[in-house]
Image (cartoon, rainbow over all chains, first blue to last red; front, top):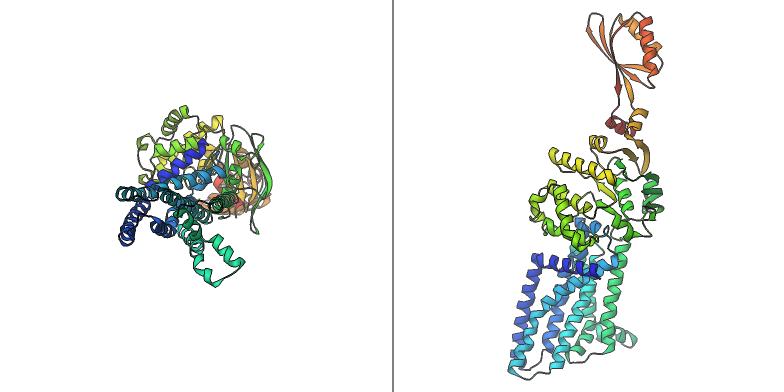
Length: 236
Length: 307
């Protein structure tokens, strides 16, 4: 556990030392602010439902930029050899790096909590729906991070890692667009796979076991595959 | 201390190491020699447990590297060919991280960091960002992380790469001192370095050990190259004397004026040739002014073995 914390701290500082991290933080805050004011101004509702959906859309593009370096950079610079020749297991390494990145992602999301405070000042919003919405967006981001970490463990190239992440996240995000072309069990499968159908429940204040299982199982599965890819050194 | 048993390593169909076996004792400094691509780095990676062997096993202190990877890694310090550094960290931050990851007790971290900073002569750059350091400093920061946990086995892949002559000397002395208590396995292309540091040499070619032994043993077993002669006499008689001596060939001749000659002879066998040569020269009325045995250095042997 102590070793996980050491790596978590190291990973968080590594994120914060990267100039790209500040660009991502700035873009996230600016874009979220613009959409927040546009949506509130247009709808005149004390709800953040549509803001959460915009956040989800933005994270599809931003999360691979955060995760692409996590393992790919370690491998290309040779520090992976250092990490894996210290008495640190692959599982500890993956968990530490994941938690460090998740901490950074939480920092990215934290300024968005101001929107709730603003709405609270001027109206009486459905607090449960807003809080579950934030939780849903955070959970979905956590899932995107797990996908990004997995693809970063497959290659030495950060560009390849980001592109592979985009391919997987686009598939998960945009699969709902094809729902009208399929029917029966296929339609059900698409609904299960698509991230959009799961986040919508959170955004209206509903947390279901199915949605939780969806996010948690993908996170666990991706982290397991990452550990496997590191122990088998498939990039070599 | 380190026992390598019938190690082979394949990358796809390519055989990088083939049936390597050797036993490295505690306190021994062993040098791996070989051309680029001979398999030295792969062998070192297998010793650290970073890469698994396709066939065979490695034991460190009686424990199998693949079965007990974490226990083994606590006993090993490893400096890869490219120093594994985080350019955005300061030297001290990096060494603290290395100490934490290598299970150095929290109270010992600071003294250990100070010790390796002093041992590797990098105290003056301890607060500098690694990205701003020269190649020589980076190499020594890499070495410092390898010894931060006071390992029993030190594996160094080209530890003096990129160092200037003074830094080179300092690092060599450091390795020699470390070798007093620990097992040190190092690879290098600088043969003079091996001659100065290593107790034992292992020459690898195409993934196979082609020579294994102490430096003195290797030098004496393949060390005779020939003889240099300064003689006075008729050249025809000199030639006859050389031809009559078994296993000697003249490879160079310089007339020093009159009937004085300088000769460079190649020997295929042992010292007995030279005694025989002296007798033959005497019997052919050639006066020997100087006779000097030429011995092969490690460099000559290395080049010859890799031809």
